[in-house]
Length: 357
Image (spheres, rainbow, N blue to C red):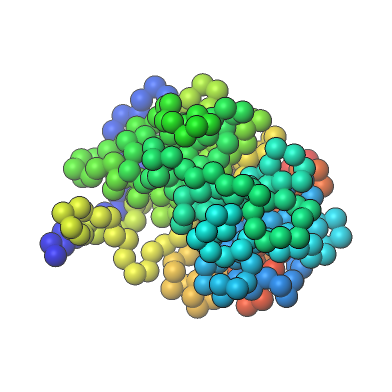
């Protein structure tokens, strides 16, 4: 195996080519945020073993289990946020029709009784009823060939989806409701001293999570391996790139495997952003800045939520009393619901500070 080791500690301003007209850049520092400590009440449910993702549909909280739980255990749990009671399980484990292996994302259904979940491992979305007792889904939709390389995707309009790909030359791709690619937006900027890095490698270097708000027309890419947050305005197809506080790229290796050079970030990668939410007024981004080894020792993943306006201006740093892995926001009650990473993981409930209301 040919191992070509490249260790890069490059600053953004010297590593990128000139931005195109649809890109604007902002560099932030942690001191740009006003710090607001917030405390939570935690709810624990014995039915949930190893939670990995959280969703919110009206007043119902949806929790998915990590793939490591026993196969006979349901993949999804429904929690009532009004009285914090356990509602019911969903999601029969399996590879057959209306079954799933994992539940990576949740989407609101066409009516109040339904929701959809995305199985990243099987590249399909499954529809569930909130009211019936079966673990099986009601229907499912398998992703088309053009969508197979997507990491994450979400509904953009009544007739289209937006997603981020592992191999595309674009930061964000657009698909119609039938799964046909209809657009690609934002070319990757080249690393100055490594112009040979291809789209697949650049996509991995900038890998992370993708969330959005169709009503606001705003969608967010947050970097798992670097301090980068990208705001995409779907109405005018423009980007705002927010880098910092750490401007260095992560150290990595290029490893040849089967004739393809893969980007390898080592056995102890550093994790930066963990999740993001777009509300009517703000962008909320969960930030960690810890390595895998640190997390394994302390169980602390992310204890800060950075709040930006829709133009990417840094406003507040919500200092959390518990470590979270991801979160949702209930705009009706002005509450944050987060999955904790402690020994007995549960749901932490925070009240959004008055300064933000």
